[in-house]
Length: 140
Image (cartoon, rainbow, N blue to C red; front, side):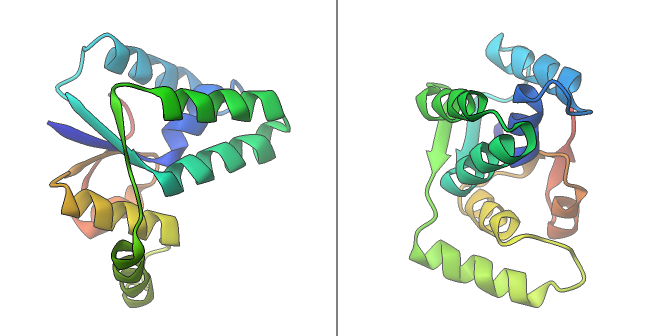
């Protein structure tokens, strides 16, 4: 099974003050130990940007945000999907068309990438992905 990992879990894992921190630690430990049904893990370059930037802004800790970025970039179990021009344009159309859902453009790029790679499950604290037809998991 395939799982797309959104920004929230990465940030919660690295911010001890985040209300989801303990759940994120447990979930990533399960992933590390192979205790989930997910064998293929994905994220994107836009998620990397959002997570590292968000970590820096929330914690005011440059070292922690560098640690987070390094962990994501060096992970052997995580496939980094890249937003190309076609994906960006598709995401932009989705963003413009779904005004009833408070999606970010990054959310839209994630949705387009997930669809292109046959991913139906998203590890996220953002339930808006459900409105796009994804199964959202807040814990693993």
